[in-house]
Amino acid sequence: MVEYMGREWGRDELAQYVGHMRQIAGIKALEHTDGTARGSRLLQVYTGSGLSFEVLPDRALDISHVTFKGMSLSWQSSAGNVHPAYYEADGLGWLRSFPGGLMTTCGMDTFGAPSEDGGEAFGIHGRVGNIPAEQVSYFDQVIERPGDESLHPISINGLVRQSRLFGENLVLKRVISTGIGSNTIMVNDVVVNDGFAPQPHMMLYHCNLGFPLLSEHATLEIDSEETVPRDAEAEKGVDSWMQFQKPTPGYAEQVFRHKVRPYAKRMAQATLRNEQIGLALTIRYSHETLPHLFQWKQMGQGAYVLGIEPANSSAVEGRATARERDDLPMLEPGESRQYSLVFEVEEL
Image (cartoon, rainbow, N blue to C red; front, side, top):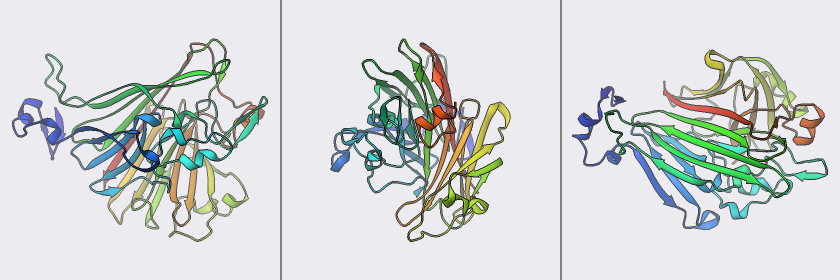
């Protein structure tokens, strides 16, 4: 059974009203044909509730633009979707191909500011978000399972391998799922060390919320035991981290670390609520494996974005700092780590 249009339906009953289930919800496989995104794949998902989102197979199956009933929930950078061939690994080059979007994966061996660790230079936020996924498969509710009359989830699967001779061999196995009539996107990741030596493993999920969900009428709700500003600039706004203003000329980004209280099932959450447009978006994440939460508040003109960033290390300053703090997560050979995120839209 599935809830759709205010009531519950069985598959056979709902099927009588349509010629094809994709009339209501499903996945469209597309390809960019212009600009720096040309040649990269796009999976467009629509659930029938008004929720629509884009998944980028050539960028680690990250989630790009998201809308609900025509209103944008995510922020898109001026670069837009960029083919991974244009990725610049050094220093801040990552920013030239950073699309924004609902979720950009950072890692898998570093995240945060550029740094040098063990004689090796690491660029901002790592490589994984610019690696194409392989073994990508997707299905929607048109697939039936024998003896099961339910409406099955809409699901996208694939794996991303970050590997180098004499270096790391880390594999991300990702499943993104939703369903007919759903206002929810679920992401389940497993990262495995497929090599034969211990490897540093830093992960951060860069979730980027934008206008019109984000505006001077929005408020951020986090059950935070402690909020610590990253630097002197963030110190200026530490008492108003939950409030937002109109786009501000010359605004300097503010980053806060939140010590979040988890709730049932070892999950934690953050909610951006905008009563003016009648929408809220809640991000739930696995607090056990992502114990740190960073908030990126950028109120600049054109760079008007709220970043909600669960992570497995406190060192947003980069890998070298993580090692200095003794907060550099490691994966032993064959060891795996699981992460989950849930994005849920609520009409107020």
